[in-house]
Length: 265
Length: 265
Image (cartoon, rainbow over all chains, first blue to last red; front, side, top):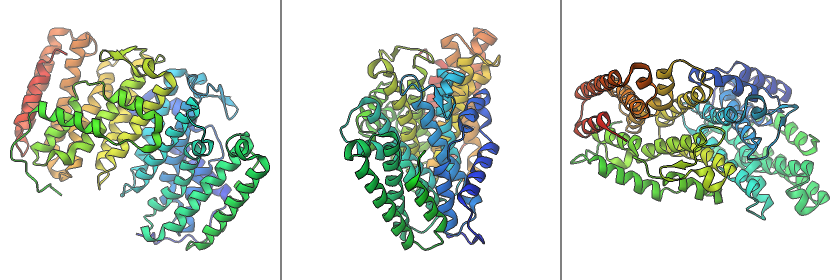
């Protein structure tokens, strides 16, 4: 069912981000988490660009839905992303003591609590995704989460020469899911999903290549910086082309694509 | 929709356990997990009584459904249970080097892989639960998982004097969900669920009290062994009474209740 509620104007990315921040701030966690809630909120409140939920909301608006309908799916994506950061930062994995300029969860709350906080973030993400009548959002999220975990495994074990595959799993999958979750949240008919899905794939690839350029690994290591920059421009070009094919006002998404292509952080 | 397929006879608990073992053995994991699959399978293959999935299947048969329909939900419960064991065994939490007579996952594969294997088990559990047309099984699983994580938090932080609450969250919730997931898997109409849900609550309590008696904590510590034994008998009595109220052949479930009440391992 296509939502009947067409917003009068699209929200700018900064407005969408504010909506995400407010929704996360006010999000009621499962009461049974008890004292664990503090570390979950600490990890979630760490800021970041909220780029996955912002894209999810922008896709929702582009197909003509009020953002309110897409917010739980958007927040679920951010919870899965945060879960992955909390566990990746653990001493046994990347051993990062800082995250976005603050002590990482295991430094602030200890390793045991950080492990449980990550677990809780993942389970809460599914609870949110399951607040929809259909299970499409949760299915999308489960697939992306499993891909992301597979990518993290390749990363810590060095169990691959295929850096592109590693980063596609670790980064691209959840990024593409930001588009897929929006489509499922608004229950866009499957026959209308193909160009959107193609857009999601290009967006994931674009984010991943630029990430690699900024970190100096993956595509940048494999192809050299200049070629990686070309590949990013090509992915951005294809993302714009896919946007032109979909039915809806994609001006805000085009702005986001252009921003991702030239981002420096 | 009530399943139209009424099995001719109920399976005995040992038969149900064999079905669970076979299903878990043959379970196709998400290909993107790659090399992580080995540690996930290692943890899953550790044996155990498979009591949660067996109860789930027995409830399914009692309401007249073929076990095949309930197997994914039953397996999802066992994956969540295994996820919790893998993370609980980590050095930062209970620091257990052995699990069911074998090296625990972090000893066999290292801490980083064990953390990711636990994450993957949880995400795979949701993928399985989401293989149903309705999202009821996954919702049930999310609630129970969050309760369980809250219980584990109380356990490691010693952040409560309420040992009964701790064990209800840590053990009882997933046990009750074994009943709830079966009801959702067969889509039993909500008006018929109440006596089953009451049975699930008693079953969770029974398992928890007996667990405490065997471990010498929780109810046993709080009430003394003799009184805890009385409480277990009372819970078993109420579980039998609730079973007598439901519509279906509950003979196998009655056998399971009696077995749980007198179990010594």
